[in-house]
Length: 538
Image 1 (cartoon, rainbow, N blue to C red):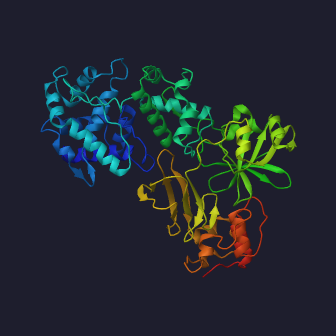
Image 2 (cartoon, helix red, strand yellow):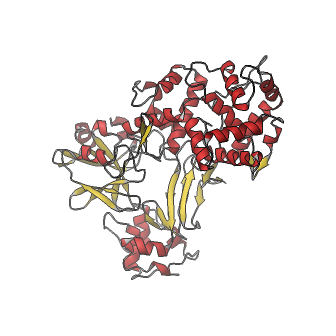
C-alpha cells in the first residue's frame, strides 16, 4: 500500500476523532497530543511512530498544495494541520510557547535540519495561510467552529504557530474530570455553555493535584484574554465528549459495579414518587428500577454514593415534575413555571416563603410548590435557572422517559431565535418555532444546538415495545399502524380546549374519555390500554 493511501486513512481518522455529532456546532480544539495520537494509530492498526513516519514522508517533499484536494468529501489537510498541532504539544514540558520554539519541533517531525528554517519557511510562504483558511472554511460549512492562529505582520508572518489549538493536553483534561465529579456534573448533562462555565469556574479552582496538573496550572497562569476564551472552549468541548471516567496519576479508573465512585452513569434517573408515602427510586435508562432509598436522616448521603448530587454540599435535592409519569425527577436547575419538589435537611426559610409547612419524614423536609417569578427572586437556593431550555420535545405518543412510538414521534418546540440544529449530525434549518419529527424511523437520535450538549431520545417500534414494557400488558401493540388520518392520536394534541392541567392529561380526557391517576407509570400507555381493550389500530 502506498504512503499516500496510508496518509488518506490517517487524515480521515483525525477528522473523525475530533469532528463528530457531539461536537458539531461548537468550537473544536484539534488537541493532537501523544495519547490522542496513540488512540488514532491503534484504530488504524499502526503505531504512533508509523503514523508520524507516514505523515513525514507525505509532507516533506513536493509542496502541500495537494492537501487542499478532497478524498470522499474530506480535505486532505487534516493530516498536515494535525502534525503541526502535534509539534506544538511536544513543547508542553517547557516554558517556551513561541514560533522560535515551535519550528525546531516541526522541522524534526518533517525530517528537516532542526535549526535550518529555510525549507519550512518556503512551505509556509507558499501554502500555510491557504491551508488554515481552507481548514476553517470547510469546518464552518459543516457546522464546526475553529479559532485560527493569529495573523502576524512583517518578518515571520507566514509562521503560524497554532496556539489556538495547543493548550491543555489529554492528561490535563482527564485529571480535570475529577472536578466535574466534585461539583456533581454528569456526562451528557443538558447544561448550556454559559451555565457550565459559571459552575466549573476554571480560574477559581484551587491548585490541587486532584483536579489540576502542573501543566494546566501553568496554562492558566499565563493569563491573556485570547488564550483564556480558548481554554474555556477546550474544557467545554472535553465535557461534551466526557464518558464519566475520572483519571488519576496517569491511569484511568474503571471499576465495574454500582459502588464505583469514579465512573458516572450518564443515563440514570432519580425519581421522587408519591405513593402512600413519598419514596425515592433510582432507575436506569430503560426505566428499570435499580434501587429504592428509604427517606431518613442519611438519605442525601446514601443517594450521593450511587448518584452524584449537584447540590450535595448544600444538603438538598431539587426535583421537577415529569407530568407523563406523575412523578418528580432530580434536576440541577429549576425553571420558572416548573412544578417543583425540594428535599432538604435544612431549609427553614422555604416554609416561610411558601407559607406552607413541608412534609416531614425522620428529619427530612419535602416542599412542593410551583416556581413563580416572584418566588425565584426571593428564594435563596443554588439552582434557579439562568438560561431557559432552548427547546422542548412535545406531543407524540411518549412511551418512555425519552422514548416515542414509531409513527408518533415528537415535535421540537424551540424557544428564542434558533436558525438551525443538527439531528444525528445532519444540519436542519428552522424556519418556524416548531419542527415536526413524527415520521422518524425507529432508532436513537441526538438533537444538537450550539453551546449545549447533544440531547438523546429514542423512537421504538411497536413490536419492540411489546416485548420490553410491562405497561403494555394486555395491549397488542403489533396492530399499531402509523396513520395521518387521526392527528389527535398521532400527535397527542389538544385541538379544541385550552388544557387546564398538563397537555397529556388533557389529551387523555379529550380523546380517550378517561383520567389516569396511576403514579410512576406511563399515563398515556395505561389510558390507551384500557380504552382500546388491548388493541390499537387504524
